[in-house]
Picture 1 (cartoon, rainbow over the protein chains, first blue to last red):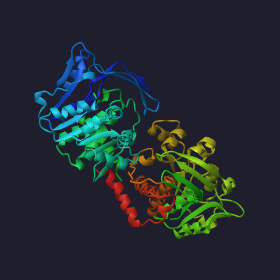
Picture 2: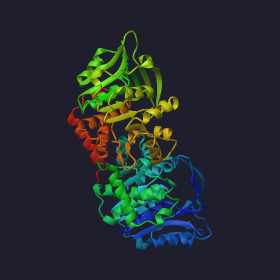
Picture 3: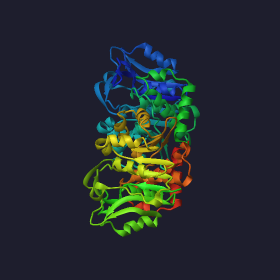
Picture 4: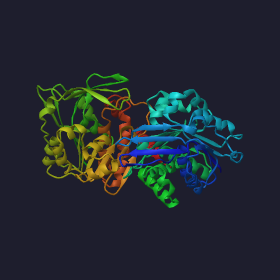
Length: 302
Length: 302
């Protein structure tokens, strides 16, 4: 089953109460692809970077089996760069720098070899670019998952609503669900969002877990209390990558299997936050992941 | 198994975005006792009210099998009265009126017939009164559960820390756990609080559920997304009542059984918030409760 992942591949510079980094590899598509790579091979990436992007970073992705034929490298241009500083409680953050650079006019070119795509992960990006990708795939994928954020609800709501009609699963956080629906109650918010297009909705609640919901059923994945939360950057993307990677691996998009996929995504996100950036995602093993998934299972069993 | 419940029995006047009430029956011990009454008989109440407290309200408690021999009725005095207004998101609230009245010099007298107490629920009250109750019981109960709030951490921290050494289970919310421990991380906060006395800690997270934790194990009870959240008043007390009521009914205070007790407490709290005050707690049936508990089970099963 081939998985196509679209999103940013970028530089991040992160400051948390526990330390700070120089420019390190980041971006939604990076976290998604690395996370998914623990579940499925045949991952194709579409993104854009500048000439400043180190080939060693691209090699990191390739080493995890991620095909980067669709990664455009723009000569003479610079990569997208985000810098942020987390508050002392780690729940809030301030954006210090956003340099769009190559992202400003990103035209997502899909290599011919990517056309046979079963699972499409539209990582957080301009809704118009996300829509372009759906239009450029000749065959509709078996499953389309979209991640977005409040920023796009503020500046490109109509575009976002249009692309929502073309997807199967939407992942957003609880505040974003409230913003998108105009409903404070989470169940009412979910109903309204499900009427906008996606058949399934995942509401991410940070340390409190995640809610998977369709028009007939719902499932609550707990948040695993962690001893150390070092850097939340990329946790949502890592969750999405684990979710769709698990689905691609199992080839089963039933609601029951999505429950297991949400737990696997949550397990991956719990690894992500324990170190800076992608650090923890580079050194996992199937055994570590299974042990972590079992912790989630034990946490809710009664 | 006899259950002794201490706390306020009082008047509440509540305003939420969905309406407002006149003075209605409220108070921690009221919610605790009503909730517990669905699981166990032989519930003994110790509290104080004024002459203004309607006998019909006392009859409501008696009708649910709650023994009110320990309810002191102070001639010529007025009952404790609390009035509050919830914010539009229902998560925050402003206290409009607090009239201590009879509560100002509450001396918790334990009737002789209450002395054979197996389960003691120390509802939210002055820590000194909670401690007095533990001193006045000749035999230590099998299980002592204490509920408290940030207010007592602000004004009576030393008293609270002293009574914490005498209890088995503490129930507080996540903000209070952070305040009491001085740790933001919930696991670290829990470890520190467990070193203060209680062997088991329940961290209530409102709509996000509850965490049960001891020094070896932990359990996450999800929050059940509800269509209508009408009035959160008493939800924490109702949770505590369902928790200790279930334990008293089963006579098993193992961690595994406490998991089930937390789910039953959560189910009771979910009923509580669907109507104003105690309204929903007066009309439940074992079948409704079982159905609700099964919803919690289904919500986390994968």
